[in-house]
Image (cartoon, rainbow, N blue to C red; front, side, top):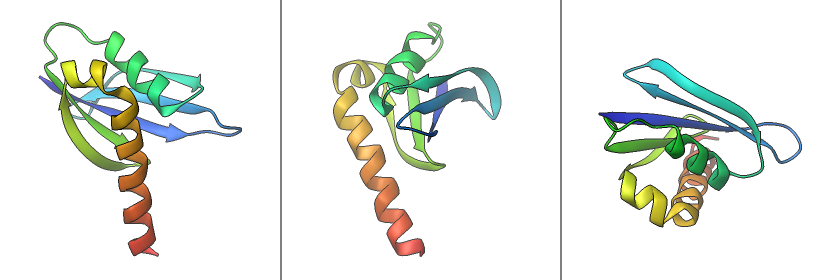
Length: 93
C-alpha cells in the first residue's frame, strides 16, 4: 500500500501532518517543529502493509518514496518538498 503524507505549515514555525490511504484519513498530528519531524512521525505510525509514501507539502506532491528512503533521507526529502512547492507556487502566481 502507498500512503500519502499531507504536510502543512501552521503558525509560528509549526507544522501539521495527516496520513491517508486512497483518500481515507488514517491518523494525524499537529504542532511539530519541522517538515522533517512530520515525515518521521508519519513514518513511525505506519503499519507493515505500507511500502511507500507520497509526500505532499501545502497540497503539492513532490514525490513517492519507499519507506527505507524516508528513514535514510528525511532531510533531503523535506527539502525537496519545500523546493518543489516553492517552484510551483512561483509559476502559479
